[in-house]
Length: 101
Image (cartoon, rainbow, N blue to C red):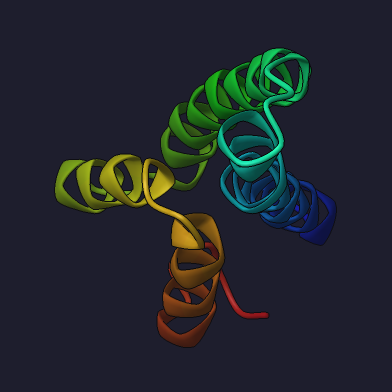
């Protein structure tokens, strides 16, 4: 595959990470400290959609680049952690999982 696919996947991971950080660092404190629960609704919904899109993209990229099941499983678990997709990008770029960067 081409560099564009890799770049798109990594940027999607960064966007998903940003939405998770916004949820945990902005929306949740607004809900519990400032008593404004509406922020969690929109930010949480956006994060959920981005997470699902990221996981579908992960499966797609793994199929195209023939990434092993263990690596896909680890990537799926990392997707559920704050900064997990960024860590995954760093690991996969370092090891050349999706080809040379």
